[in-house]
Length: 380
Image (cartoon, rainbow, N blue to C red; front, side):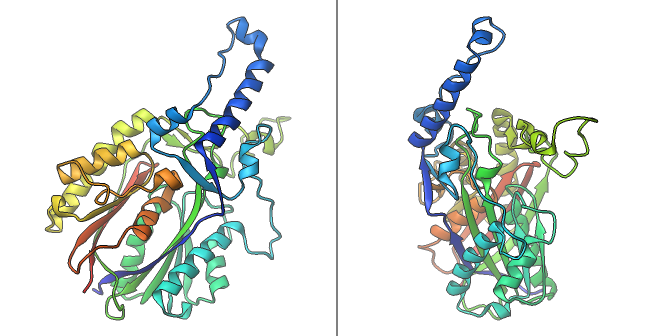
């Protein structure tokens, strides 16, 4: 069995960002309009008035201070409150593929080898802009890569599931190098008119090159990978191709149906916290011990970046003490929740200071429920 190595990573960050102050101002303006339009119903007790959001509420609930987005104007427009991303001709590179290619080129530059040495491409993300042809195949063509490519979706855990898949391809000898990309336009599936979640997500793309150890120059040995899924409706998005088929005879146009709130991101946050934190912490500790590792000796945790309170509690449970900022990496204050890309951003930006033999953990968790652990060791 050939050892797999994380040889390089890449990152694409959009140029535009939205602060909490800007987001709150937009939401509150919309809420005021809504309350004014429904003043009679509110006064009659038939409808509850919407309450304002606040910077303090957002930071206490999540730890998020800003987020990067592809289109700031559309999100902050109280009349729209969703990004404006015009549909492109079929002949043009799609927006998800374009983001992925930019992250991939960053990874390839750090790798120092030509794209022709890649044997497979995996596009692992929480949302695909179309069913087919696969975004991964589009990325493959744009980079001039031969071999094969495919998309996979395990929501926020897509990257760790993709890393395991890539490592398995290496172990089996199917290919010598795999490119995994995670383009996430989370702003497009977020309901910016929902006070409890309007601040959660941002846009970004990451890339990881997984390579056979016998040809890798340096990098990070993948010591072990483990995946887990448990069905739950507590994080859900009902958007899909059957939405149109569900319309009653003489019903609304499909476009109107897809505007319903359950066709966007919906979660029961407190239930998710209660369910996922112990599940993930136990999974990490069990996997570490099965690999002969003491969880308390992990030099760094690169966890999924959804909520600072979740990450801090998982960090304490895994390390058995209060982690330092260096040990439990947080990037969600700048990037917000970027679904599958979050743990990879954390790894990409904060993997310095490791001596050969030091170990760390890349971990993601989210809808499904789903969770993945990838233990890595710095190579000599």
